[in-house]
Length: 423
Image 1 (tube, rainbow, N blue to C red):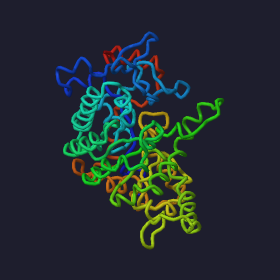
Image 2 (image 1 turned 30 degrees about the vertical axis):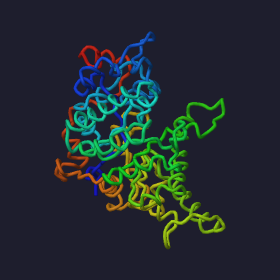
Image 3 (image 1 turned 120 degrees about the horizontal axis):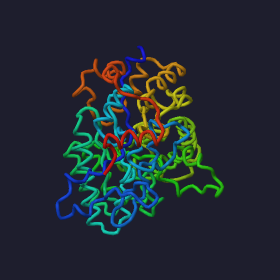
Image 4 (image 1 turned 135 degrees about the vertical axis):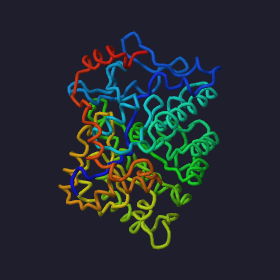
């Protein structure tokens, strides 16, 4: 295999929702109360809903195409962004330039897990806008290019029965997964161990949908030093994924739902061999602890591999331990348009790590597309023939895409001159 022969399916990317996303999906009587992008007194754009700025900063780390010295967590205006952050047509062009066949895009304005709607006081209005959000994502963002996006929804966090209903509703629209809090109790909600979410998990199993748990929602479980630098915000979250795995594995969740499938989005893979060694040793050694059973002849590591898809962006150490992790549970991510993204050189990054770890062609195909598409029960070649889905074939479609890095000021000048990113 050559690098250009790889097929890349990224199951962790993000979009910066366009300001007009609600106009086609909200009943007229509610439209003036839909979330809106406004420019604040500091000259920055922000999403407003029910009179408050949303919990997720506008554009959160959507720095793709900027020089590294200008990166940050909160770009100021939409016109400063690379248009592919919010324009699905430009996104597909950027995917082609990066040799990426398909992408699963997590929300920004809604929070990775619908926190924006959960934290607003008027829940009737929140439900209207949450459903409109899902309709926009499925019908417009994903629907614009069938075969290039894996639909991902959100559910109401304030009412589990409403969450169940929304799972069934969006499943009928072709949605393959929901984005959910990796540690609900970190936000004062019931934990996975409590059983509160079981009706929703049952609905996911019934619809053959995936529970996608993105890093970043377990912060309050960790007490950082007040002097902690910003580096902690980027390095530590993937380590907290172990806490989520522990809740699911040693709580009742995976025993109650033997068919539940969980993607640990952006959690990395290097921690998994140690964790599986530790839980197996614990289970075998601490036999005096009653009430734990993983099935006849099974260890915790067996159950982990039956339920979990572990996702990474770059992880050379983890790839070297791929057989200890389990070759069938590792999947690759791009993380466009955040600071961690490898765009527009994702194939080069991935190929170098595969070669360094001594991965076979079979290993590479499993990691870059086979494991993810099997797990999400999504056919990557339903709309794109396999021979046209490779890195080389897709990049050949994008020779006119400019991947030059430009400053925020340069992006603003270029976009505003073209009427892009203004409202």
